[in-house]
Image 1 (cartoon, rainbow, N blue to C red):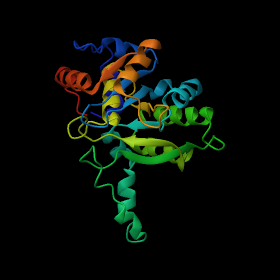
Image 2: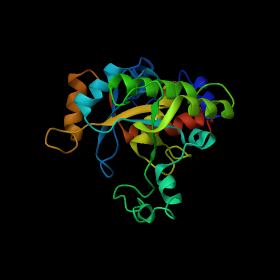
Image 3: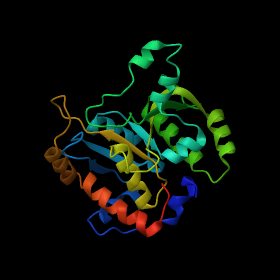
Image 4: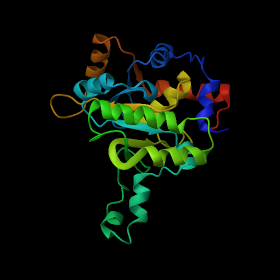
Length: 252
């Protein structure tokens, strides 16, 4: 079963570990906060279903989170459409550019897999591509294209016609067995989108503090309370994800 129709099957999944409110907010197009793990990045990301991204949402992420804005793609769908990991592009170019081979991301201190970074894109109707309006257009049109109920060949053609690379929207590819080998925000937030029954692409941004480092878990939780946002953890998501896979038998 292809990834772009799985989300249509699972509109009403209700986990029993406290995620229900967060999934309701995702379905309503609201931002939620996702903390990964105490033994990983120890970071909290703002996330929203990519299909609901607006210029106002991106402005809030820039101002209140401050990290890198990225948009996720399910790994199987990325492979189907020929959207590579950027590390693979660099590695395959090492004969022409030897430095790229020397810079391979094989020593990430919090992860034993390669980086989830994919390519960067702009929609061809954008100007510079960096404004909130331009990035919102790129993200929404990208998601509309990759999840279109159409043959892969048609979606690939439309991606080529309507987007250029490089650009100002950073794509992230999940691992192909979601949350089996990598437990990063790319996978955690994408899993939330599957469980919420929306198009399974998340737009995310790390929350950085005024001291130049990441928000602590406590400060991110305080922010969530002040702003009436749901705060969820990697442990909650993984626990719910296991139940989701058993219930739906989704191959993601």
